[in-house]
Length: 330
Image 1 (cartoon, rainbow, N blue to C red):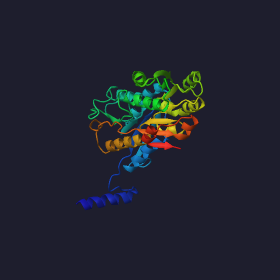
Image 2: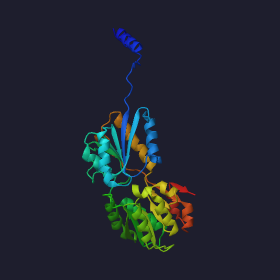
Image 3: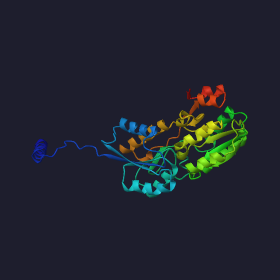
Image 4: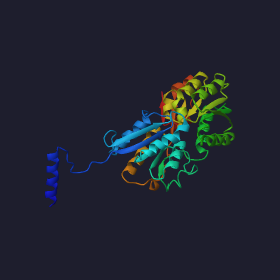
């Protein structure tokens, strides 16, 4: 009987000229992506696409990416989040805390995967790391508390022992950035420095703030720490060029900044992070529930040094830092 029915369907397909699918093809999966500034052509987004392919999801075949960027305007994130939710995608990938929160306010059913986040428990996104408990999961960029920024400042102090002040470049539009700055302030006395605030909200303010920073060339009593938010990462050349011009030792978060001429970075590998995020998305597309996927925190931080920049700054890199480096760019 089954053969007779199958033969009938084949015959009907032949007579009608319509292709007959003996096995239903997998429906195209729709992935929403919400960024505050970054374009989809950056290396870490390509690593996401490559990892999705490894799991059987190929853009243009059985996967479609709906990409939205606020172009640096954080006020646009809620409306862009609403656009994505209205499309009813299978999963939404979100890259910044304001985006995570906007999406959480709009949907409790569409899975949301965080591509990095400050303490997601503190900011009300999940119940716990082991049991997120809702429709949000993913990865963080650094653990909560002051340890991360204290480590960055300690590395700077080791590089520039004479430094008594660290200029902290941060974005007040991010709800967690003010906390980051306060953590840096609290940790500063322990390593013998003061922290100076340099808040920037957009490229123009970044240019103006740097121009107004009274930094004598080759002042060995001052260093700078770039918080490396999406805004600062996008316009990193402004900070890198300023640091070179004023011979100002500067700490960054990401390898990309050091590869472009920055002195040193301590933080997660963005490319690796987005591969991890893609693994989460793949599991969800195959039926896993976000509530059951523990949120991952980094287990390893990369220490990247640009030796050419160090020589230009007339800095001798201590052996303790060189031996600890994940990568040395000559």
